[in-house]
Length: 343
Image (cartoon, rainbow, N blue to C red; front, side, top):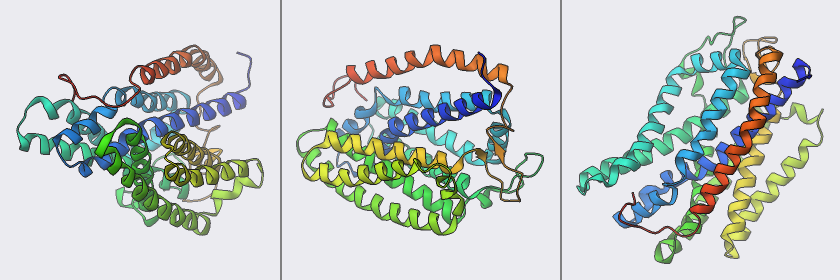
């Protein structure tokens, strides 16, 4: 493939953004359902919530696995720095995702109330902790982390838990809870669906408050967040689309159009991911120890040959991933029905 190294680096940065966006949208409502799970009143409602994502969650997480694999191969220096610096956080994330997954598989294997309460707690804690850690990672990426000239992380876990990363973590929890509530309104019916409608309003209100706080904090304390907008004015169109998508969520809920609300929620998450990527570009890891220490898509990338071969594989493989995702969602469309072999 006769493309320059710089062009291949840019292409792979865009592909990583696409993978991250796909994961945030698809696993976002999965995690949101887990965050909302304690609001279910009885065992049947808890089973309905779990079964709403039961056939989908593992396929959704393929996007995260693909994102990690693509970063490892395309930008190995950034991958090594991030995973070594965030080692404790990644272990916590891994355990959260594992216990969240096995809680769905184990919960209904025994009818003991204590057994089910234990796995319900694992489902909620795993979903909430994973979302919080994703948000904390975004916050740290925005403000930068202590990385030296040797591309090694120079800080500790406490350095990653500042006010801004924790705020972005809470914002992510609120956003995914809203996303999950809208999804549940599409998948439930009857009295549960009516109560889910209330969850949508409350989660949207919390999301809106944290959105405003995070935006104000970002504009005031992270000046580099808007630096690229001077060079790429078209990025303001994404800001406009983001605002319109957010505004359409309560409108759609009020007009009882949950499908439109869900599409708007998906567009909101996509816009946030794009804006985060634009703010970060061309960095993958921003160092707060001085200029010239950032890991960019150019100095952290693999060779042109490696990137070219990977691009050919991606062009061949991505249609299969998209087709698989489309078929699964089509097969399991409609309201949740509890059966003998349900979770």
